[in-house]
Amino acid sequence: MLLNHARSRQVLFFGGKGGVGKTTVSAAVAYALANEGRRVLLVSTDPAHNLGHLFHREIGPRPVRLAPGLDGLELDPDATVNEHVDEVSGALQSLMPVHLHGEVDKHVSLSRDAPGMQEAAILEKIAEVVERGGKDYQHVIFDTAPSGHTARLMVLPEVMTAWTEGLIKRRERADRFAEFVRELGSDKALGENIVGDKDPEAEKESRIRGILNRRRLKFARLRDVLADAGTTSFVIVLVAERLPVLETIELHEQLVKAGLAINCLVVNKRLPEGAGEFLEERRGQERVHLAALEKALPKVPRQHLGLAAKDVTGLDALKEFSERLLAGAGS
Image (cartoon, rainbow, N blue to C red; front, top):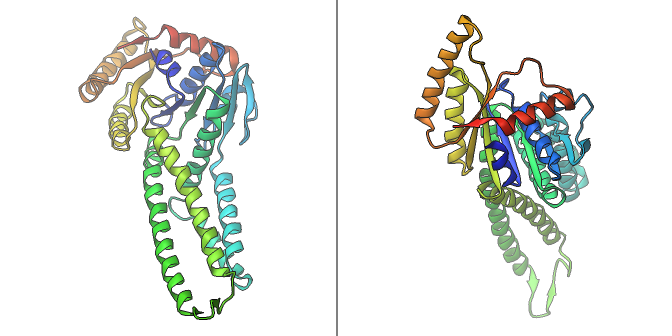
């Protein structure tokens, strides 16, 4: 069921509580799609970055080949923030007088640790990956950070688009006022402007508007992609325990409010039947928690995956796990 769903989407996000197996499930889906001859990009936005451990190799911020048809990259939050801040600093310094560059550096340095800076920087990078990846790959699959971080990230495109549009409107009002002031300083009778034909302030304002418009378009395009249920989907991975089930219900509500389509739940690490009295008691607890999940989210399809006897690491283990996806039962 999960693979059938994945085949019909260009962008997939896998999210859920930490430790439920998001990396393994997302990597198995990516591997299975690539094994069918599709071009797939697997992207980790989780600071823990387990993709490298899973594939037994170094993975960085540039796409690397993980298997035939499958590339992977890891978005490092700290490096992404530094790149984002350096870009903003360079843009500001190009627009400000030289004697104010020190103040710009001071302000930008303080903003590195500002609340929301990491999410905003990661969001810009996700927007770039989605845009570029859509041209080079048939599927772009994101292994995201734990639920709370991901929920904040998914509502940001709408917030950042509105915020940037507000800045643009304020710049436009400032431009109109500046134009009015320049008109007052011109000698219309002589057809000459006191400040000359080329106004440095006007050029600066034009560059500011250009930067803001580029950001607005980037966020708006990502917002449109996320809102397109035919292109993008979010898969929530969980285990049949109380806290992951409660967190899944909450994450589902937050993502629906953000306009995302949640088309599948993956219940991972299900205990096997007939494995002794202790495990049967644990299976009874699973049934209780899954009943709560069914009551809260009855319309979202589910796929159940059994608990693996060994850790899933390396291509051979990932291949075996992806085959279990094909055999997994939906409900």
